[in-house]
Length: 513
Image 1 (cartoon, helix red, strand yellow):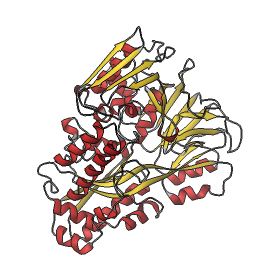
Image 2: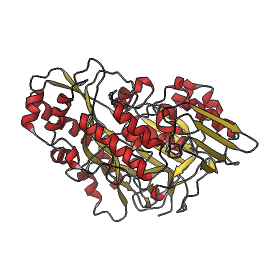
Image 3: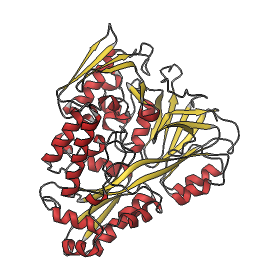
Image 4: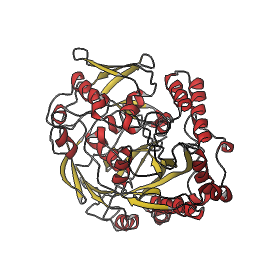
């Protein structure tokens, strides 16, 4: 489903009160600084949102899980391992360099290069080797994979696969800092960046590569987007209600409820992420090779009680790593470990020096970490908790063998396929070039995941993915928790397109409401 709504994930400030005419500037907030302006190094939702403004992708998400052209005008999946894309002829970089097939191929090769050490490489291309070739005369890019990976087209629509222009490729440090004026292929450039304070993005006056969505965009893109940093949702709500902000995202249902009697603002509810417990299973960590301890943690957690803390009971209770709306998701609750405080105490009592890392992105994540801490200590485990901001949380996980034992994470599945969440806990670890935060050793799950990614038949693909999920529950490699509901709110003059549960900030428009 496609909706055009006012956005609350960024709080935008207009000069006039809510309900008055549009300006050419949107002021918003993020809950943390972008981790990097290099899309291949992006960590955390706030960074993905920024990357989507600065860099175009070959494809873009549309309604009903469909894809439309971005920098590519057409594409073809010749098999599960051979893909071709025709590059549009009217796209340019922010320094006026024409975007050619060769330039696109150079950027994709960098993302695929193991030396880049991008945690998104396997999400986009899979685990095998990648060959990217270009034909400038035909304006085509061809991607050949040594291992089948049916979700590659979806990977070409995520912000992390954004095309970096030659000036950015030539200066990796400047690219990461956002200081290369010609690095950007998307509609916006970095005008100003003050870490911890604010960011300003300016619309390119010559940009014309807007996608043709099923529902055409109307209105005018903002000429400037000014972004502040705040985790205080109540303050952001106050600013929107006072007419000082245009755009905000609210995970706190109590704060979102304040807009129920405000007919002039737009609201849209999405499940922006899913939450589940992940264990560090690297050698020497307490949960490595100890499924009985992991089962003890699962026994300590009451999903409904967690949900009451996390979302006031408004979120979907999960039966896997993705919501029930996803294809191929497990729906059999009997596979999950039931809440059993006595079993938890028997397994965990006396267990010492467990390091829990929490995320302070908002009150929900902070409170959820408090809940996990409390039930583990109630079961007799000795737990120390370290709460960090959103950018630090994700960059710490991306380091691989960091000093943590247990986290509950919010998994933002931007691809829209269950495989993009399964490989967070199955397959090669982060330090091995994979995406598996836990570094678990699950050969049966890996084989099932690979079988699903190689299948072009939906029934066979789902059977394989369902088997991969069963291995997670048998091994207790995860503890499913709840969806992460968000309410997006915008002023009447600011709209944004929402494709299923995906909010595309590059579609923000003024004067279309």
